[in-house]
Length: 76
Image 1 (tube, rainbow, N blue to C red):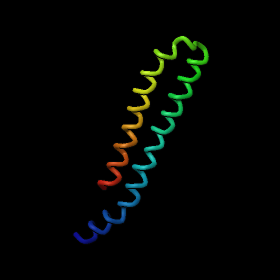
Image 2 (image 1 turned 60 degrees about the vertical axis):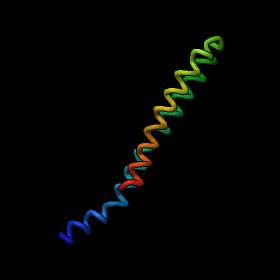
Image 3 (image 1 turned 120 degrees about the vertical axis):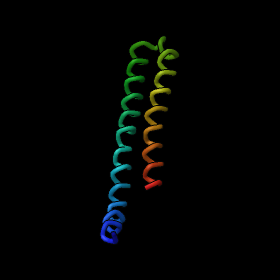
Image 4 (image 1 turned 30 degrees about the vertical axis):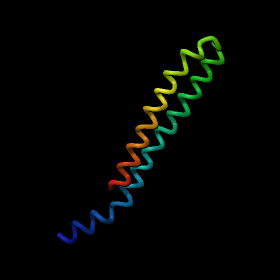
């Protein structure tokens, strides 16, 4: 039983690093969302008010994924 406990405890730093590495995906998606929103506003400036709210919602959902990853990393 002690061997299993030692093996699990040895893998905890790796698990935390893996969870935080997964948090790169939301950062990339937030950059992509912002880039595409600015591109669409540049093509059609009158639609800026219609683009802003969905862009902010998408960024908030992507950021929530990163926060979940951080919470899981702290709970491991």
